[in-house]
Amino acid sequence: MNYLEPNYEYITDQARLDEVAENILARETDLAVDIEGDGLDPYLIKLLLVQIGTAEKVYIFNAKLKFDRLKSVLENPKIKKILQNAKFDYGVLKATKGIEMGGNIYDTMLAERLLTIGLVRENSLLALADKYLGIKLDKNWESYNWDQTARTGKMTKRHLNYAATDALILFPIREKQMAAIAREDLTRVADLEFSLVQVVANIELKGSLIDVRKWRDNLDQLKTRRDSTALQIQEELRPFYKIKQVDLFGNHADVLNLNSPSQVIGAFEKLGIDLPSTGEAILQKTNHPVAKLLLQYRECEKLLTAFGENLLAKIHPKTGRLHPDFMQIGADTGRFACSNPNLQQIPTDSSFRSCFVPAPGYKFVVADYSQIELRIMAELSEDPEFTDAFKKGEDLHTKTASQMYGVPTEMVDKKMRFNAKSINFGLMYGRGAPSLAGQLGISVEDSEKLLEKYFNTYKKVKSWLDKVGKEAVKKGYSKTISGRKRWYKELDPGDPLYQRMISHTERQGKNTPIQGSSADMTKLALVAVHQRLNKEKYDAFLIHTVHDEILIEVRADQAEAVHTLVKEEMIRAGEKLLHKVPIQVEVKIADAWEH
DNA sequence: GGGCCGAGCCAC
DNA sequence: AAACGTGGCTCGGCCC
Image 1: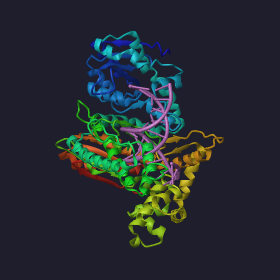
Image 2 (image 1 turned 120 degrees about the horizontal axis):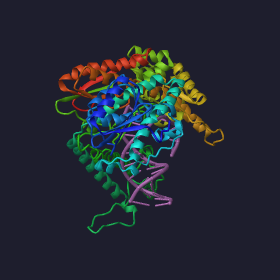
Image 3 (image 1 turned 30 degrees about the horizontal axis):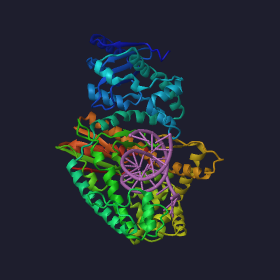
Image 4 (image 1 turned 30 degrees about the vertical axis):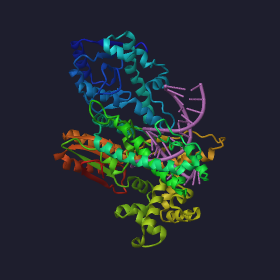
């Protein structure tokens, strides 16, 4: 097959479209699907072409035609659709043509990500064509001038060729990927990711509503606080700066840029203080009013820049909502990542989160897994003490403290519990004694003693962590409960940083099965919840997920029913992965994003 | 004036 | 600053 000179038919005639659609529908064979448009935004794009390829021939449909017949082809769950980055095509087809590509999607991009996580991030069609077929695609998108094509409707042979090739090469790429997926035992997790595509696409399409006035009120308060703090700092420092800058209007210009670490170091030098860095930890220990003020300034400034007008600017002109980009396999552990804007890093402070609201007449159902990563660590390590605590529904941190300090649970005070909690969480990151000592404000020796006592109680936690850490280095990969893999690059023993890099891989090896299995679980739940909401025809939409949390916007009168449904499905998903430790899910009906 | 990188900091 | 896993955003500062 010559993929660069593909066999295609360009269809601009309605009768021919209907005829071809009927034929494909009758054959029920696998199809490659791709689209061309003049942009990337499903709500703004002008759809130009839809390519549907059988293994031998590509049909290119002009998007001006009526797609009713194609809709039944693309929505038929018996027909497998092969796409590169299916989320995009799904979103555009739904927004422009009302077509919801049913289940049975194969995504070459996600497949490639599963096969190479940790090694490379080359998932573009250009890279895949080169890797699997040795073909150099012409991906100079701009040179095709699709904008102009959209305006004039003039489709050149070069355009059609490009469009056909993109669809046709998906077949052989999938074939080679499938062999690797079977070889690496990734079938289960691949099926999960493929069934998740339409869920993620719908989350993005629906978007999140934000109360703009409330958001701005919050910003105004922060601005006031920031400005007065900045003024205080500048006044404190003024005596130490010889040159006072005054502008034409008589305003005193700032003597230093508070956002510049190097300038801040310089300012503290004038105060007779040498800072090793201007990070939070150092400033907290620095005994000078300017240090405290600077921390306060930083807090305001961070919130104002990262979560200020910039975020509001991303509200969509057509929908009036935020439509962030959810990267389905964003993190190497399998977790989602999110951007433009990243709604996974909105401050937990209710002054921010409460600005995310359901539309009038709707409610939120907010659900999250309780202590899921610790439960996973208990399950995987099979530690009897740890597992037992969850089975009995005990407060794990209090229990840990009681055992570490050798006192009955009633005698555990806040500090003891905090220390135990720090260890419980820290271990999942491969945390060591020096780091723990830093956080708890104790000596490294005392910190070592605490860890020793901890591991004396939870012996299997320690042996499991050590085991998976070492295995990551030895085998070159980690695995989650559902079989997801994360590979590690081979390290060079001659590298002066070799030991450090080994330690890093060990820590990743400890964390990845935990974090990755948690991602598996939330993804299973997302698929199950989405399918039930659809099947049972609720007026309800998944709109967000933050690692162990799920948000649904639901018509108010259905909130109770969806509350029950979500809890059921999240627990069911959890029980598919954990068998020795119970799952606990917190679900709430609310008028804003809160727990 | 754009690209890149590190510092710093928000989330889980 | 580094002692702890996974990300993204903004800034200063440097380069071309």
